[in-house]
Amino acid sequence: MSKVEESVEVEVPVRAAYDQWNRFETFPRFMDGVERIDRRTDRLTHWVTEFGGVRREFDAVVTEQIPDERVAWTTVEGEACQTGVVTFHRLDERRTMVVLQMEFTPEGPTERAGVELGFVKRKVTGELRRFKSFIEERGGQEPGAWHRAV
Image (cartoon, rainbow, N blue to C red; front, side, top):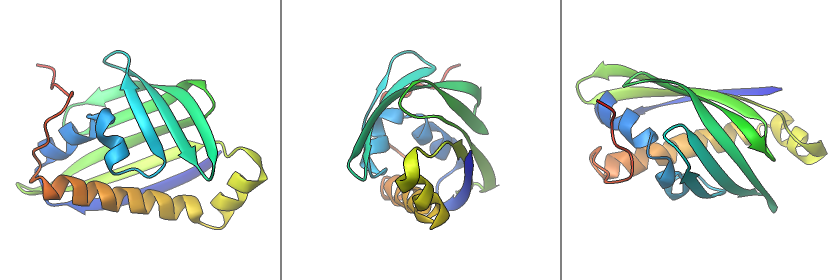
């Protein structure tokens, strides 16, 4: 298993950052290589990705969800093996620290080399920066499929 942890400060309230992260269908707009995410149930998603010419499909399930604090997931079926958690830390009324931690199994020598050479860490850093731009450009307001449970 390989691990990566990265964080980014976003200039939106914690609720906006948390709600946007739960709009899985918007991930392709800021995550390179994510072609599509389909929500199957409230907790189950189906992912289609392509990185370095390698296309994968897999299902992931949300294993823990604490509103405005954290979302944890794990893959349950398909061509990828990963677990992760993203946490949201209120810095003040308008700023949030988003921390992403992932563990995954690199497949084959190319992916193992990518981990060793730091490509995966840089990719995650880039995706969090794009998340920051994505949400800040919209002022924390993004219409989408996510509906907060009451």
